[in-house]
Image (cartoon, rainbow, N blue to C red; front, side, top):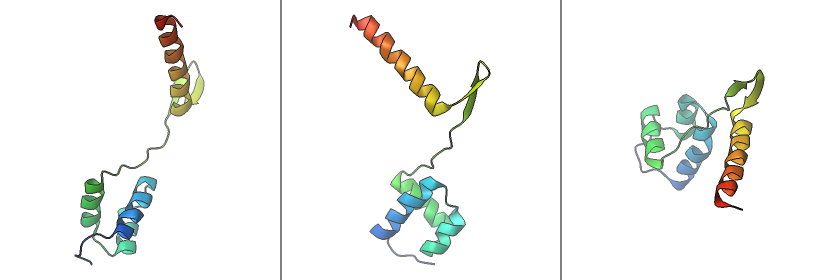
Length: 86
């Protein structure tokens, strides 16, 4: 296992792989770094895993959160415009 400073190439790999949910074991093998070292570097880089869209049931119609939020945001925009008098 490496104990050297993280390279830009390694950081770029983490920035691409970690949000996709690539497992620590696979990243560890690819980078020749321990899972602990990867977790620390991921934290140092402020990386987050992308979360899968959840399904919300509203009035018996399944909507993805993304489309629900889009619809909700449209309603907020309309309400803001009404309250601002436009």
